[in-house]
Image 1 (cartoon, rainbow, N blue to C red):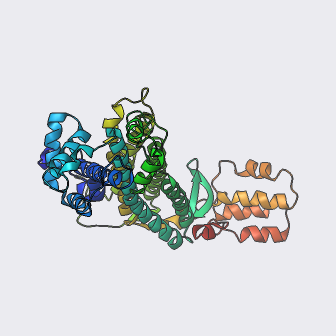
Image 2 (cartoon, rainbow, N blue to C red; image 1 turned 30 degrees about the vertical axis):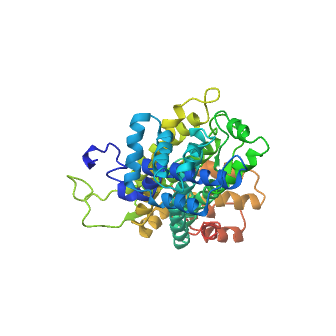
Length: 450
């Protein structure tokens, strides 16, 4: 297909940035995964599922494994051409395998055992579980990159004081490093949560009761057998299902990604505001253009781009969790088309992370402006004043200071005059006068490095 026929920006504008994910979630790779599962199931039942199934010779096993390795673009195209006739994707894979093995003398007598005892949702469930695990690994690598970068910046900027703002108003000072580290630690927790989610698949047949397998040999514990098979793909089995695995684990995963998205949106918006207030400067790239008409413009486009893409991902993640965990009676097919879009939602989040990384690499603290802003707001030290007064036993310290400073803006002289008028010890006055907005940081510097 030509690039001008691709409707999604993931497939054209951003395609180079999400290559690993697009390869995982492509239709070709989904069919390849189904193909591999079908072949491995044939090997499995003939090797370890009792006398109902003929033994496979070593030559036959070797030839089946060769078929796996030979899967290519032409194989994917052939499956799609079969699907146009069958209007059934998994059945198209089955028929493709049957065609393949009938041409191989050591395999042609096993054609009837392809897809034995399975419903298409068994194959789909395990296939998507495999794809999701692979995608999570790719996604986690990207998430790890931004965590490493934020950790580095937290430590590098640990001693750079800034004016905090609560409700948008001047508040007790902090350091850039400590404020960045808030996001670092939040992402670390969510990364651990994301990786702890157990991805599950079902393999219990049409309505989850192992009908056909039990019929083929009722002496075999098919729950244990299928669990062993599923674990070959490093996936856990959900043995109690309807025709479909209920997708609760996918909901857990999408909720986790949604939280990651929200943390990054929060980061993007904070950095955007710091840039707007000139606390961060954007590094110049003379080749870039900030405006088609205003030559001076240098814009925080990476953070804005990230916020937009994370928002798109969020809308999809919410829908996935809401939709996929519901199915009428033993199943309806409405989850099928939704599952095909999982990669889209994950890719938009991945893209958002990448954009934030680019943005973070383009900013540098404007220490001069940060200090200037602090020196314009000595009133933030009134918190310290009323605490020292309380330590000296002044019962209504807060109320006294509020009466004198509420809504006021203090400079250094105003602050010193206020201290001189207080009925407190000389030692306490000296202690307060040794403070400044840039030194009243608590343990922010230490927290930045934690």
